[in-house]
Image (cartoon, rainbow, N blue to C red; front, side, top):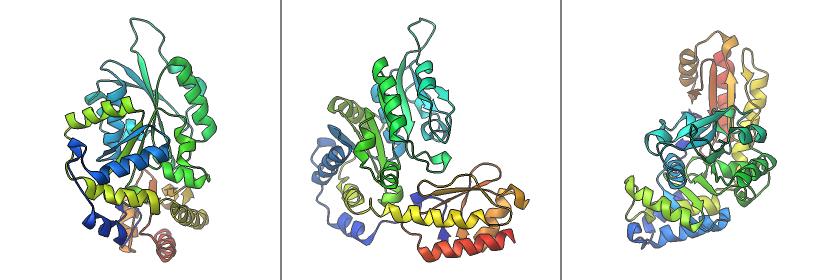
Amino acid sequence: MIDLRSDTLTQPTKEMRDAIYSASVGDDVYGEDPTINKLEEMAAEITGKEAALFVTSGTQGNQLAVLAQCSPGDEIIVESESHIFFYEGAAISALAGVQPRVIEGVRGVMDPALVKQAIRSEDIHFPDTTLICLENTHNRSGGSVVSLDNLKKIYDVAQEAGIPVHIDGARLFNAAVATYKNVSDYTQYCDSVQICLSKGLGSPVGSILAGDKKFIQKARKWRKRLGGGMRQAGFLAASGIISLTKMVDRLAEDHDKAQKLAEAIEGMNGLALVNKPDTNIVIINIENTKQKNEEFLERLKQEGVLAVSFGEGQIRLTTHYDVSDEDIEHAISALRRVVG
């Protein structure tokens, strides 16, 4: 079965499995796990930040960023279809007690002028704006890349107002590879950043949260409060080190496969591209096939391909390490058979 539902389904490589088996470990809550410490130091250097923290997931990393930088009753600015707003179970409100101020973006990109307008003025009737959250790449826009120019303009607005910026960079390495940049080129325009070691980077679990030392100290305490303090977590960090050292450049292969898939879909009867992929996500509109999502996905499954519903009339296909060129050819043939 060819699984194009998500890059979260990537399996750890043999090198990762061997590293996990042989990792040197200690108690990370005491700060004594050498492999965790190595990963965090490496992540801080790569992102250009003072410090980093290994966390269980991208969602946990995002929530720690909010908890460490906001207080109950505050307001944070988010894009209308961002992961932190759309897919994290209203955790910003449930855990941090903050409310979202939502701005509709274009392919995940917020207008800096609208961000500036959304920042609350000093008034007892208003909440305090205490954080601006960005997402790069933007999942619901098909893995679109938010440009450095846009990031800089929003960061400049934030700095003028004295408000920190957090980047949900679950797939930030995809953005960097697609634009031939370093991750630090992007993270220079934020105060905190979360990056997944799973997804396209292949680790079985874990994300990195990075920022200045004071921020990471607060985030570490919140991680403990949420039950995220781990003991011999170096087994997981060992895989993360390989993600950062061996799995980044190859993301270009996933992008090429997504592009090949998209080009083939453009000529298919009844299908329309919702996005021309910047990275590794392809979204297609199936309305002209007259099939419901469930029927389309089931027929595709019978052809040996798994995909995922992405709103009524839309299907998402995501390339990753475990999808070969031959798998893409098979998926293209399967789609042609499904649309007849």
